[in-house]
Length: 427
Image (cartoon, rainbow, N blue to C red):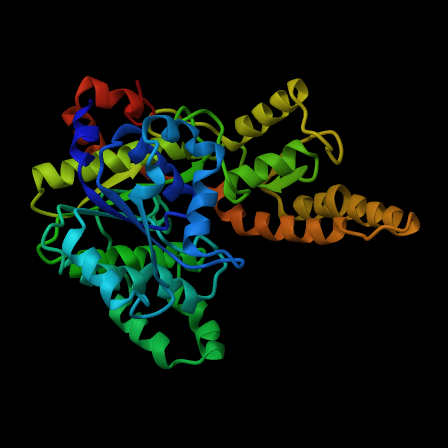
């Protein structure tokens, strides 16, 4: 057994955001490599008429957990679902559950966040800032806690071109933002949002920067580390290649391009597409948890989990690879033949949207109406182009991330633990 896997054996682990993409893969890796861990606590709410336990069963029944069931047949007994709502200031955790978490937890992985780029500032502050503050308060009362790992994003400081592994000061104190959200009404919050976020492109990246500052200010004597992944995509190797459970971010663009829905995009073809597989993020996160608990650094260390330093890929090349792959293995029920064109010209983009996107969608919906079916393509195209407009900021720019701490961590790992990390160490 590797050093990292051995460390998590017998541990009680709290994961927030365990029902999300990253959280599921993190939970799978822990159970698969450390089946002797004691328990994983996951904070969740009932959803779509399902109880907490029914949601857990649904997660475990996915293909992602097939290998886990072979090495850890009693995995269902090792997951303790706890009702919580991060939209509440007190997190809505019962007194009994809170007492269990405080007295038993050894490691916390805080993965929960709103990842909607265009979310309202109030909601983004609640999930990405206030909830982080409340979890840190909980962590400070955990006598057995060995490490608190906060998952941020490499784009938390995307207003800068070169980003070091440090926490940058925010123009406004996070506590002032949190306090103001309690008494400002929605109309005023919406009005002042552009002035508050300044050079940040959206509320997501802005509130992730605020969340990091909260971690810095309220860490106290806790062993804390921050992991900053870039654009998280499908699994690379573990537990098998290509697993993804959503169409957000790069996955949605790839599918939309491959099926012929998206044919043109305002973007710089030579801008770096800093994509990172989710299993690479998980492997680094677990290594960070081990290092933070065992070596107890004197200050909060930040680890960049990015690919551009070691294995850069440009958006233009990515588009070409999508087309080449779809020629060999086409999507089922494709709308039309795939094509991808990048341009930095706004007028050209507007023309391409009209000719390549809106016109075919309107014509197809007219055909559906004439044949007695419900039109759907215009609505789908509207949603797709709204998503694309949100992502355009990132497709037109490149960033440089320093990776000194990440490289230092890699040098501390055993050869067995280094193997899953090879994408981040460039080997």
